[in-house]
Length: 383
Ligand SMILES: Cc1cc2nc3c(=O)[nH]c(=O)nc-3n(C[C@H](O)[C@H](O)[C@H](O)COP(=O)(O)OP(=O)(O)OC[C@H]3O[C@@H](n4cnc5c(N)ncnc54)[C@H](O)[C@@H]3O)c2cc1C
Image (cartoon, rainbow, N blue to C red; front, side, top):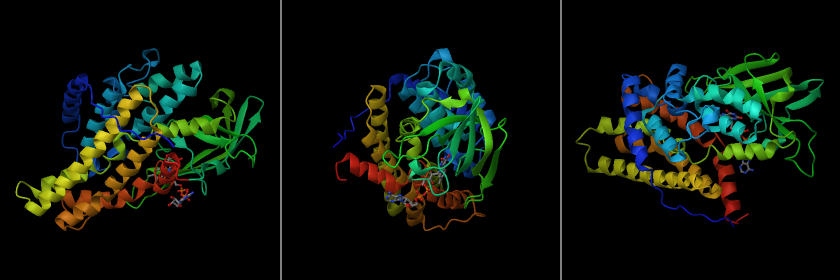
């Protein structure tokens, strides 16, 4: 059974100076940015904004200076993330590269790959997407069928990915591909990760999928004899499973796991005004208290990660609880005000309508609630 601890953590004093800097940047750069756009949270995109963040040193903040990073602490990065998310800043263009692909390349990539890809990520100019899920292979990722075969000077990829967020704007995908037939004795063996240049690789087709809110933010991606060079392999051939599980751990327990519907809380407070009445005030108080507890738990994980610990079980718990909170927000807000979401309504109703449609997906992305609960149960020694 794994140890679960939430050691109290504090953001460092230098984080507060940084917070003021980030707030001033947001006030200047997002003036007049509508609430319904802010409600998109880390799904909203603006490459110009990403480049400005890069220029301020807020992408790849913890990475080595030799690769264009800034060698700041994970807790300082936390401050930047929470301010950006609380403001609903359009961070999605660089989001995956900053959170996952960059750390993956730093950990498993070659020196040449780091030098080639990392600096442009830190400048907010190079965007990545994650090619893991396939039709019928989401939770059971080891069953993917997209295959990579050796050629004289690289690899040929055939197959299909699905739900690939931002594949239409990303410069690169890190694709999980089967490079050896599945071994029934070890389902996780024989998988590899490849860097696919989304703009230059022939045989790659991206087809958008529209979600309930009418957005085309994720896609189907088809590989038909798509050839990638030898140096597109990330890490070890056949060792992709270990790399992917490390990569998925980068995306748990951050502030994006409880702040996705923050804009609705913000709009609710504005809608209620100063004379909310005791019942509504108590409802808002409960939402704020819940948020504050999740924040403390998430900061605790960030603090443990900073000191070199690997609190995987605690991180899975924060993701599970955080997602439940942010997904339930539209229902709880409805209970407080009784207003129904209306796409064509005022600012508050619009944000509520968007959130009601978007929140369905919160418990699917990055691993479903059932899968997270399975991980937690295993960690607790219950299965
Ligand atoms: C907004 C959004 C963005 C996404 N972005 C990406 C992306 O960029 N890249 C990418 O690769 N993928 C992405 N995904 C895909 C996501 O990772 C998968 O949807 C998710 O892992 C679930 O897989 P699935 O859709 O195949 O559902 P399935 O795995 O078929 O699951 C269907 C249902 O069965 C349940 N279930 C499955 N197995 C078990 C089990 N063993 N025990 C209990 N219950 C189980 C699940 O919890 C779920 O409720 C995204 C998804 C969403 C919604």
